[in-house]
Length: 225
Image (spheres, rainbow, N blue to C red):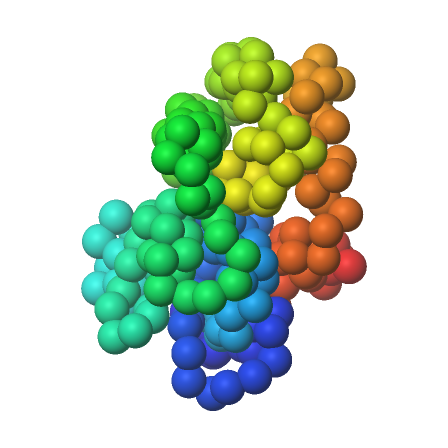
């Protein structure tokens, strides 16, 4: 793994450390959450492709036995699974709430987040795509479209300006990286007008801009913004 790089927020030498990959949806979710909360952090890039994938090293397996990113060192603990990390920092750090105070809205946020993080994204992550081989694009398109066909009518019921009402939440943090992946795999997001509209609003917000894969410490020079 590479040396520690200063994260998107300049600041203290001690603080959370995000072990992630620039294009990982799950790492991106955590970057967005840190940015929304105004949390200073450092990044340790974990190249998922170089040398067969640095996530498979013995060093990284001590951080996350699942050999996946992200792994986040914070408050003397190491956490994996992006939604767990997001909920932890929401519960322990000041700043805008990432889960609503209202119990019904909070359940809606978790429902949408889980639909994306469990029902769509894992089926087109790097490890799965590598196993699929030559048919990977059609495989990814099928499962993204299947998920979006379910997500679109849900958002029609829950959305205001954002996924659930008019406050940014964990659901929005999950949505933007998933739409980015959909576009990478040439899915026509225009088929899903609610998804498209919310995403267009979110990507103009600074926390989503600075956490984008195009401007991370490990972003390749040829695509770096």
